[in-house]
Length: 158
Image (cartoon, rainbow, N blue to C red; front, top):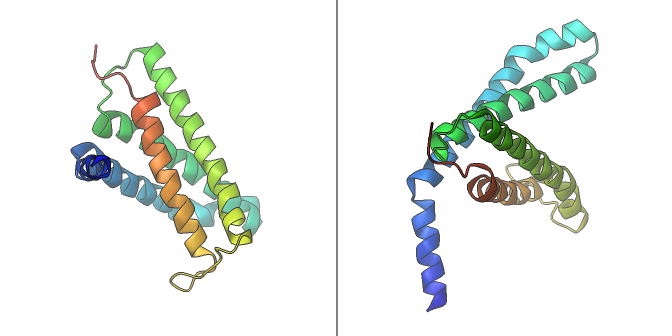
């Protein structure tokens, strides 16, 4: 009986407005990341005169822009945290960045770990993509849980 209750709650969560908006904003944040990369990469390579360094700098810029975009869209549209009071805003922003950094480390360490223990299968012809998708799924869930339970906890606005 408890298992049925768990699955009902899970289905309600997956079809909730909040979770659907979280997915939509995640897709938009990914598009922002890719768009920034596409717009900046050639200029950055030309500016620094080194392809590898240019791509690295571009990647950092794209991640920063997309995480800031994700913060504001999650705050406003997903979790509807309405407070713009400086103390609350800074707490949310720093917590969001910290959580994304932690899950980023999990991704950076988790994919090679899964590959090393045998989850190195190709998916869509891409090496180790099964490990990447597995870790990404975990990261997405953790980012949602961190945002829901610890970051965007102020619903009333000023």
